Length: 83
Image (cartoon, rainbow, N blue to C red):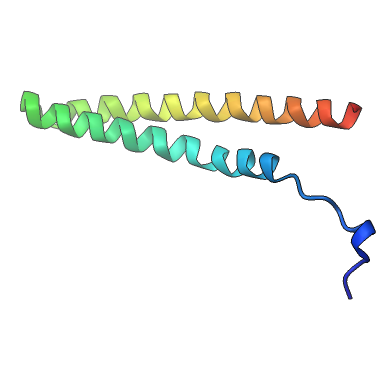
């Protein structure tokens, strides 16, 4: 049995969207880095060096984005509790 309407917890869809977008920060950084590396390998005719370098740069970029997003998410959550 569900609680009455007045007692249900209110869902903050904006915060939910921010939280789910954090899950895409790392994989998207890696995918973009791999794509750039693959394209540069084909263009420069190198032996997978560019894909390795750019994938590592993509991992670093994704981690930085993820950590910045988490820091902002936590800061906003703590500010919301104070209100």
